[in-house]
Length: 174
Image (tube, rainbow, N blue to C red; front, side, top):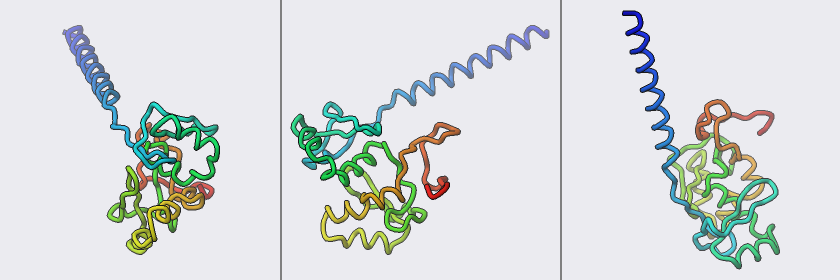
């Protein structure tokens, strides 16, 4: 009788393990559609035209000529590269780019192939009233805005799951 319980317990454990592995494999098999904006031309970028930066970031382009233009003057494209980092999931937004305060998801606005949220309607209004798309990009992806609103840490160090802005915190100003 005791051996039956052991066999049944081991069988149940094996079934659960196989089910968990299958679920993990199914999650890994789902590939998110790649969407990014070329920082040089503004056209849709592809995964086959890529430049790896020294810090590990990858910048994607629409054609073979755009990486050459980028390499000739990378500073010129800083703001548009930062937008692309968000588009491609290399960074995650954790705060308002205007104030650095907690995000209000209802204020999310499209910018390129992604969305950016703000802390309040006032900051959202500043974004909407910006003169043109370049002014909007600078407002959200300037060096100062980028440092206070985005993180390169895209996964939780404990669970390994994607970062959620509502569960982030500041540590020593970061």
